[in-house]
Image (cartoon, rainbow, N blue to C red; front, side, top):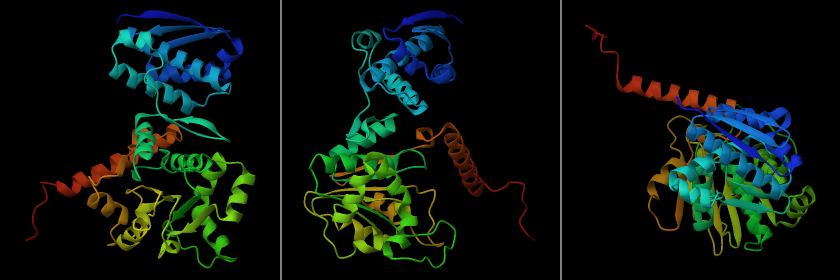
Length: 343
């Protein structure tokens, strides 16, 4: 196999070290992902590999360097994966001459908040998700854990609030236990429902200063409530997020969707593979995306196991479960041909 060598020299040693990562972990990650070998020394980098892979690695490193030039902060492995995805999409859409002439095209879309700054999509599915959020009044996002469905939805909602496009943030989840019985929970209403809503709180504190979150909760600018509290309301001038929507019933989902008022946006997220409803109860999320398919103003994004950005191991775990579920389905459709009928 033909092997080429590509050399890169970055202007700033400090920024180069941010690109390479602590103990060159980002370099090693790119080596594994693209099947190349790379040697970093100071601000100099040498990449060896197949021509296409070496060229892709060069573009990834250049993209990462441009990113740290703008932000000046360390990169995560997720950022590195995002740069690889961007470069892959770029290579699929544009011929080499155009790529060379405009190295930063195309870039995945991003959202920005005051505390977090610009957060760029890390893969094509997240890019499509952010674009759907910008272009539709109601967006359904389905997919496995770790794909960023809730986190990006909260970030987008916070950005709209900070820009003055909406006046309120309303975040909700159905209070359904995940295969456990929690029993009696002491405290007032907020203390009772907080365990169900903790993931939303975590995302909220990621995108907003703690003092702004606390003040928003006190003034009602930010409302976090179980789904049952939505009945009878008309939600205007708000971004409304329903998380874990796979655990809604058909009636609950219809009730929630019909709360939409003027100048409001709705985001519905869930994972149809993790339904905790009683046996025989149909998920409101599964029913809604089927009924509303093709309705104008409604966007739908489906994430796959390959879109998991939480951790490499999480991606592999989700993939293994998907394969196991697919195998069981195949077994149900194709019973053992050697089995003899009962006499």
